[in-house]
Length: 452
Image 1 (cartoon, rainbow, N blue to C red):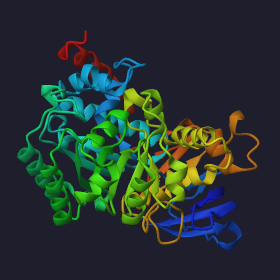
Image 2: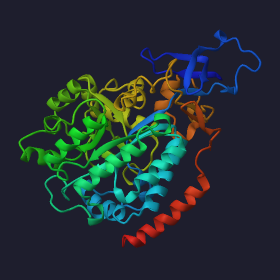
Image 3: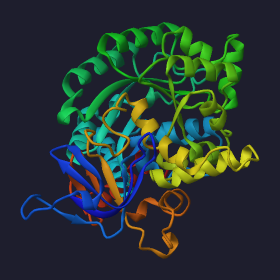
Image 4: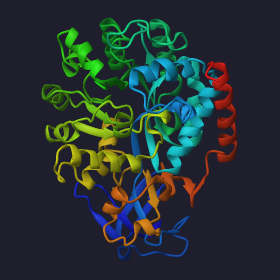
């Protein structure tokens, strides 16, 4: 039992309980509500946590993550546009990875996500060289709820540019599809269902239409999700215009839209594209920090939500954000929409918080299991300590979480009814050894890639 807390349920009514309690039995929520409704008996609970007016809320869900890019933080230059950034730095560095690099970067990323309250994530592009098995093993050990998407491609290009992908990042079409099938058989459903294996086709220009159709077919056959970057920069829009189509029409025509289909960025969607996504139940992962840093633009999130698109949030990668802190991402998302629309009601605090929880759960196809604190749902929740000057007074906890808090204010994290961080101590990963390994690997990566 966790007692004496502000509980932000984020249920359909957005109920908040002051001095409330949550009871967890096995991996599920057994009770949520006012504490006086509980008749506590000695020995009735295996563990009682006195929250001391801390805030309990659903675990955060990051729907667009690059695990391999945690190791690139502060290595890749700032103030560079996307395609130059990829060609000259990100791809050469990642193209020099070995499996140990991939595993250490994943450990670093998951450690940061746990510390800042993320309980579930979608990794969008796992290259073979990163070591799928090692990364899946890290996800299993961490206790996190993880979607691991195998990268697939058949053209070394980006949008209209030919042969721009670093040779170390090029993958064979059939080999990448076959690896998806092997990894799906081995890891999908592992950890009592915490791990899912999806398909991650590369951006248009790196995949033929034939490959996209094959991905759609395999996804249906394996009941697997699909995630992909889409309409991130103006060059993408120009590429679609050259094909006499639009981003939404393109992916819909190839059978890539629908439930458990997440398209990242979508900065340059038209209203017609948004209507296609709304009609088909397709989700968009909004990545405001990355889009702003790379000068890609601002996604029309308020308009997407108005038209019924399921919009969730993603932190993207280490060198484009440069953190994996979903609480900070929520604040940026809500402020951007207010500013660009010249309207303080363009996106509300509670709407933005639901993007990071309820909407993320829906994007994963898990809306009946996670995303809100309700009886019968999985016990994926976090405890935020508001006893900090920047969170006082705590009259409106939703306002404080969205506008004042950061991931550093997260005190404890529970996933599947198990504490994976308690009183600021991560219990599933060895923080000291991970930080040391990340420092060592980053130095060696610079030399391997020829960047030092």
